[in-house]
Image (tube, rainbow, N blue to C red):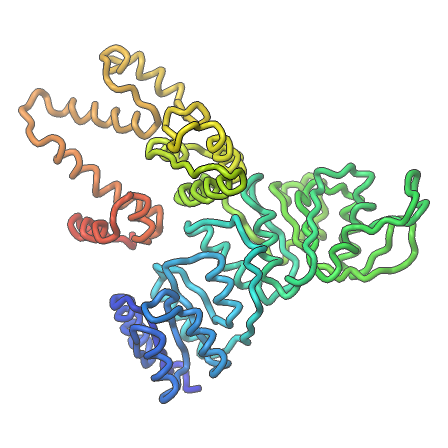
Length: 489
C-alpha cells in the first residue's frame, strides 16, 4: 500500500455531482482519485492498476455496490471499501459490514468526514467475512430518518461482535425487534433467542426462571426445571425491562456475568453461561442507581454497547412508511383488502405525539383496518387521534377575530392556529390599502422559511426534505436556488 498522503482512491457512483465532489476533496487532501459510473468499470481498472481504497455507492445502473464490495473482498481482501448510499436501511447497513466494509455512510455525508475516513482506511484494514442472512428472522424495523439510519449503522457494526448490549428506549419503540435484529446478524445467529420480561415475573420466581431449580428446592418444586440461561445456551438471552429486576436477582446476575457460570436454585452443579446478554429498559437507569434501585456495577456490565431506539415523535417522517407496513401486514394476517389513508388522515397521524410509540400506531392501524367499511380511511373517522388545543382555542373564542363570532374557519390544530394568528397580524398592517395578487404574495413569504426549516430538520438531506414537503426533489433544488437558500445551514 502506498502512503496515505498520495494513496489512490477509486470511486464508483452514478451521480456525477457526487463523483466530482469526492474527487476534488480527496485531491485537495493529497490523494489520487479516479471515479467511475459503475462497479464494472472500477473493477476493470482495479485489476490492472490496483488501489489503496474504494468508495462505492450501493444503487448503480449495472449492479449493486454491495456485490462490488463482495467481489473486491474475494480478490483483494485487504483493500478497504467505504460504502455510501441514499437508501440507508438496516439490511443495507448489515450487509455492508457483513461483507467487510470499512465504513458505511448514508447520504448526504460530510465531505470532511469522508476525507478523514479515507485517511484512516488506508492506515489500517478490517478483516472481511461473509455469513448467510436469515431474512425470515428480520422484520418490523422500518425507518429512513436520521435517527434510524444511525441505529441501523450501529447494528451493522455489531455483526461480528458478541458483546453485551443495553437497549434504551420508551415503551412501544420496538426494543425487542432491535434485540432480535442484533442477534439475527451476530455470530450466534444459529443459536436460540430467548426473551424474558422482568416486569412480568413475580420477584420470588425470578431466580428460578433465569437459572432453573432442582427438585425440592422450594415448596412446589416437584421436579428439576431448566431456566432461561440453559434454554439460551449458544445463543442470546434478552432481558426486557431490566430496570424492574429486584436487587437480589441483580446481585446473582452480576455474579454470572463476572464468572461466566451459575448454579440452579437449590443445586450445587456449576453450569457454564454460554449466553450473550441483550438487555433493554425504558427507565433512566442512572437515576435508578442514584435512588438505590439498581446496582451501578451491574449497569456497567450491561452497558458495554448502548443502543438508543428513538421515539416515534422524534422521527415523524417514518410514520407514513410504518403505516403502509402495518396496513399490508394486517391485510395479510386477516385476509382482508388493503386500505389507504386520505391525506388529511395522514396529517392527523403526523401531528399526534404517540405516547405509545410504534406499538400505539400499529394497534391504531389494526383497528382502522377492521372498523373502516370501505377502502379509504377518512380524516373524520373517530378512531383517528385528534389534538385540539384547549387554551389557545379558548383565547381565540374570546378575541375580536374569533372564528365562532365571524363564521370563519375554526383552526383544527396548533399549526393552523398559528397561521391564522400571523394572517391577522399581516392584515392589520394593510390598513385598508388596495392589495392585489395576495395569494402569490403570501406564498412567496411562506415558502422560503418553510423550506429552510425542513432542511434544518433533515440536516440538509434534500431527498428527505422533498419527501417531507411532498414535492419532487428537482423542484426542491430549483426552489433552493430561486430563494438563495443554503442547505448546509
